[in-house]
Image (cartoon, rainbow, N blue to C red; front, side):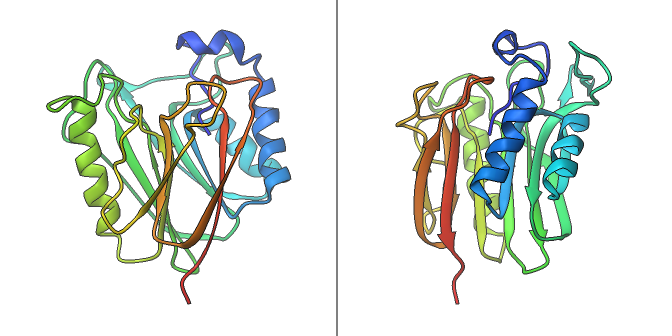
Length: 218
């Protein structure tokens, strides 16, 4: 889910905070999924969502103009970034910046490993388009390499700001092309079995939610 929580982006006017946080909690509880990825989130709101759902969480802070960006409107919600939540305990996590980015926002990827040895990853890529030579395309290639080398069953969900896939060749790709809001740029990738996708409408953010179900390899 992309929650548009920073307080700075143009989409924030429609979030009706804390309505978007309540909506995210309701979606997580209603879908009963094993993992959740959150883009354009705030660390305090992620902690609140995790506490209310009982999920475990890891957060990756996004650097903006050389420093962490504090969320505003209201203030006191922590820093801006991306998160992964899992039902199962998290035994390890890793995040790192991409080598290139456009504008003032550093883009990062985040992966967590659950106790069962499943990796769940997310990112939010640059918005400069997917033409060859763009920062987005360079990040896309780096993301594919990150996912290809995890060495465990892996699933990814995130707002990649592009329509063509960043998945490694052995992974499947699902997108929110059928969404009512900003279709086609949220993607899910993975090497789990029999993936199936539902799109759930969101009222208080400018992206709908992807719900992906898949089976672990035996």
